[in-house]
Length: 320
Image (cartoon, rainbow, N blue to C red):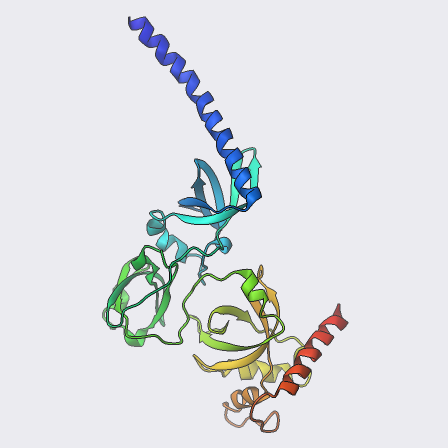
């Protein structure tokens, strides 16, 4: 009787790996089929690495880069502060690579998967502090909705926080605030590369924001991240030093008009050229004693815009 139990347990011990291997092969075939058909698959986050997350789908371990998460943060360290709550949520993505030895897959979660955000005025919401600086804190209120609405970030300047309270706040802690109404402030929300690429070659409105280290960042239509380099072919009618000084004098939450020339940063960032001569002049003159760069003008006319677009693309083609 005892020997029969021992023999049965030995057989089960050796059969278990065979059974797991069969399940794994079945899961791999399922993932390959879904990759071929472009089907979305649910996945859970297991742990964090330097550049992304270790994830699991259908019993198979995989990897997703921070760059291919449904939203991005300015600082990659912010991900470790929201990790505990992310583990409780299932996200969706598409497989774009599978390897068999060892068995792994790579996922892209930049797909529509969130509910529409509905905030109630004067109601309090909870968020996680994802960054702290000398200027204030950044809080992600997506935590309040269990990430069903994606990421909703808000920066709180130190002037809005008690001097006694600020030193006690730590990254990763829950922070509560009252919603007082919509502003033009930026929230980090997911956007597809296809949507951003459609803006190339068009005149766009750009929101100027100041980062935590007081460096300037640009947000096209207040939503898509932009980059404004001081390339010589972009500003042949100006001294690049003058353009740099004009950009440095831009105010927080100021809107400017630019030309979206191309995309960069894996198609997530728009390459911009500042094309409003009036705005350039006004910003440059903010420093005391600065001479005028150009004559006064009201708005950029359609003819001037067409000329600016054609000039930029012609110069780019000449370089190629």
